[in-house]
Image (cartoon, rainbow, N blue to C red; front, side, top):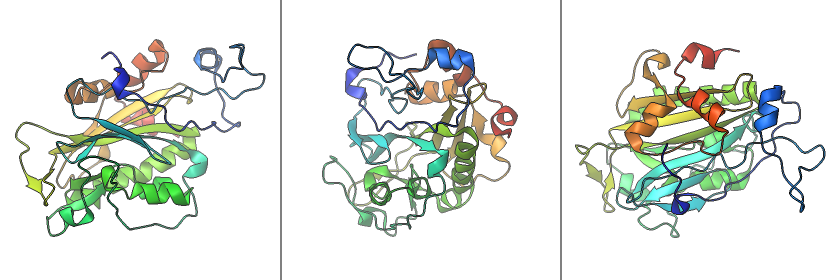
Length: 277
């Protein structure tokens, strides 16, 4: 694993996992609890792995970190897209009632953040990395989701097809496991030279999504890589390991998990095991 650089880490939104979640003893022993001033766990505090939305970005990669209401991201001004977007999705949040905002906006706090118009007539969709339907639990989270810092140029057939199918599945998995942690982003190759708009937003050749269910029994992990084009067939065809995504991107995911659990979930690529009820 890569060392976690201080410049690549920030504190994300920490949410309490539903009290009804069942944890096996070995997980309970490893999980962190909120300490009091003496450093001792608070009596009855819910067990929760902290800071799983921290992702280590390789040194030398342009990275501006920002925490939004429902997700965190690292933005790359050279590409005009995020390096990664990370969020924790609770099962209770998967069925929110907030209506879709549907108004993209330029975040002026982010250097190099594109405008809505940079994608107009480009031939590419404004593809959410953190999807709007994951943020229906809060008006502020929904509005933040339409920041152009959360967007990448995405082939329409992927955005409306396989990528959308995966987004729908992740909400079902969050309901099943009470909480999952998700990181998504673009994958660039040296041959990816196409740029769009006045901002020169770089079009990625592929996208990744990694997921961890650290509170499941046993803990599970899985990753997907989709080319930025029509991706027909079973989603199982696009499954890979989290370790493989780390190798391709140079990113380091879920570094705050106990080592044994991190190693367990990051080497797994069994869609059957991940998708079981």
